[in-house]
Length: 168
Length: 168
DNA sequence: AAGATATGTCAACATGACTGTCCCAAATCG
DNA sequence: CGATTTGGGACAGTCATGTTGACATATCTT
Image (tube, chains in turn brown, red, orange, cyan):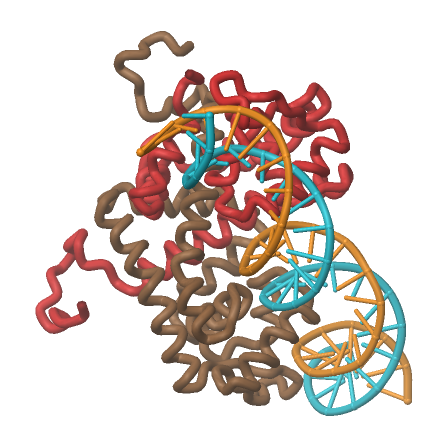
């Protein structure tokens, strides 16, 4: 089915060859690692790692996030998150408040210092992402999103979607 | 960058809002982690981890790959790769041959057992990727690829492209 | 009052990165 | 030819970040 080698179509809709799957796997791997590696030097300067970055990111995205929600987003154990969160609080980047509706909850938000670091980290990711968006064009962006959504198990999609929703 | 906030053009493809950038970051994170997590149970059954999976993957993709090329693909230190490679060789999944053009090189390939495990791992990734491709449609796939390529530093793109090239 | 839930904490351990150092064999350069 | 560089390997120690398991406390729900 490799018939016309001269006029290779980008991707055939029905006959998905192994090479097309492998290309997706590889680009996803290299694209993801390129993105996260971009922030490493900023993190190293602050004495933090990628785990701290992920926590900062989601707290910045959803201020007032409860610990349990962050746990579900990161899909790690509470012991792992506990260490990260303790460090961020000890260094004054994150603060907690007791939940209003449910007083067992600890609602997380960034301090001014935390927001400053997160902004620097975000600016770094933004540079790369904006360049990629600009290079690829508007139509490509929606395609990029829709394939990625398709990779996420349907059970997890509401959680991911909730990040983009207007704050309640 | 946020200078023209007052006179925002209505639907300009160049006006990239923070939410669009954050959506890309998040979907890339969740899409990538969803993909790799799918193979974890197979790996655990074999007593390997994600580092072994990455090595197996690239050796399967480019049989006869030299150690140095694998090192550049994975972007880790040779000490880290050394341990992984030693384990894969000790368990009979990978074998080495002395380079023909350059006898210092060690060319890597999978044994039959290695190819079997890699096939099982690939089948797992393929299931998810094929479903996402199918859900999203052909146009989306090329958009997906082109944004991801844009995220990869230009200096690294030839290396990534080389994976898809016909074997020399 | 009893049970479930949200969070925190202690301890031990596994994985997979890192740095630094040293070594050997083969290729390449002068 | 000798000197240097390159490809690969090895030893030792460390760090970041994940895991299990057990247990405690406060609060909400029934």
